[in-house]
Image (cartoon, rainbow, N blue to C red):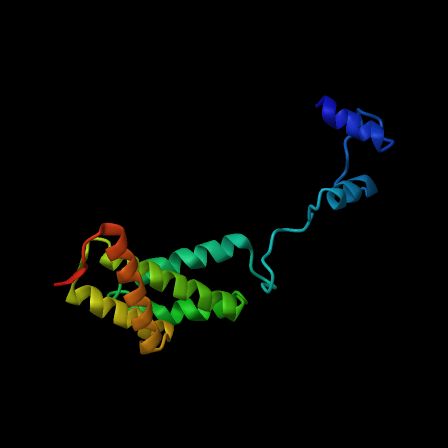
Length: 156
């Protein structure tokens, strides 16, 4: 607390007087430290908090992880992203990142099953990734996995 007392004295305030968040001193402190007193928001998200973004991302991950059973929840997820006024570029980026993680999980055991192939294809269709791009991503991840494990990924 001595540090804050000294800071208050240097700003011309009595050490025992608390700094009010609406005071000029608090504004100057926030400005000096690069702090934004407003609630945290990512650029391009007019109405969405970081919490809302994190919760939506968790739903996206859950839906993709539980495909094909969860495919009927996809439209609701996309509608929610629009209702929350999420930046469409951020939504697309999240979808692609989760798709790549889905590929990585599919090949992590060095086996690529028909069930995993169907799941990835359904995810690709829902997200709207062109087949050529999805295939390139799959081949890249398989090559990374083979290099990491030192053994080929087999299709089962």
